[in-house]
Length: 291
Length: 308
Image 1: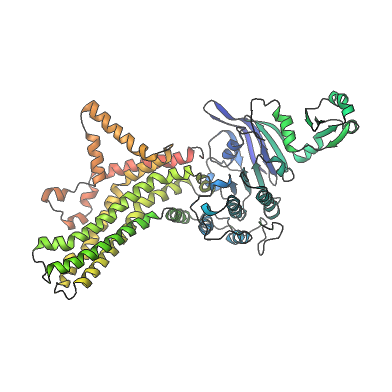
Image 2 (image 1 turned 90 degrees about the vertical axis):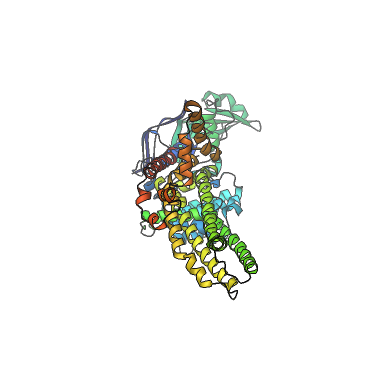
């Protein structure tokens, strides 16, 4: 069964179209990265999935209509938007009490044992915790919920490198299994390269690319071209070319690999480079967009 | 998280976890109210502080009284009232007044604050409906604050009686009279009735309006709460040279008109206890209907509005 099924999903704010009738489907057990510049429609799509915003078109999440059934849906869906949203006044112990009080799938012992590995005291208030600790606390709460779908919207925004790595390590090692589905948006794309099973590139309310990581590996090739072979490589119509330290690096879509291997060094492109190649150039309007 | 590769002791995080519990509506309502009390400690701290300050000044005034009256029990009812009944009424009035102020500020801030600090995203990530959330927030000024203030006022008055008895002991004052004249039970019944009718029912549209402002105001909810009624009053005054709206607001804020009070000049307390008079007033029912509309709108807006 598809975990998320969207058909003609559309949402506009006044004259601004945030989602322009997109179709996508996320199967159970996948880890999907939604990648796009600011204003691409990622957060709008997530808000629709979470039942936080009304939309046009058809959308089923775990077989439910998220807009009309948000409170029931939230029994099986967890959600970390970014680290700032835990209420600042709440004590760690109160957060545990509250979630245990209202969430049928929350296992307090799991959350406690996760917190025991951190230095977070039970009597501390969220406003007295560091940003990294707040993320740890939120992750502890969420990982102790036996949910089917976990939605992460910029979960590691503002965290330092160490916390970011720990965040994804914990998620993968202690939480993820083949029955759960994770949808994540982030600007730190390269850190997610080995985590994701699927990627979806979005730009100005549309889906530009939607495929699995295996597909990316088989389809796209990045070639560091030998200077002498520049003309020959360009003749094979790379979808993107850039210069790094005086060497030309080209990206090819569905190219003939044996032919390419004669022209330089081949490797699988990074998601960020692929994003720039697929979206960046013809998305000239999205100036200043971070990837 | 420090050692992410170490398996968790005693907790396998596979998805075949324990059988999910069921959370009843009452349970999620209970925890929603509790979390309001965690966040807003003023709800009980303010009336408690008022009670403590009042008790402190009461002790001083009672000691003064003992020196002033030189062991002579005031005989005329006027000075008895001055010395004893008045402080009791004052203590109740002070605590109930504080309760009203706390209720107003709570209602005005609660749904605005969760949007301001974006914690609404956390609350909405929990399986709690907007209906439950808004009703639990409404219960704070309508039920929790009046009940707490009533209890605090009751205990305060009991302590006042004990204090007065202790201070006046051996002064020749008639302590038994203190307890009988004070009619502790009668006064607390009166107070309970006031709490139930005025704070619980009469003020319902006031609190519901403040919640509605709190959920809609882009910023400065206080201005949004006060400005529209002020505009209506000004427009009505200029256009029709009448002040019906102002009178309506005045009656709403000063409490329900008491027919007994206006007829005899003094309320017959026992007749007040009969709900007949109060519940006969159309103003009460119109007010409750208005409150219901405001609350329904608040629930819808919290649901429909974008997350931030």
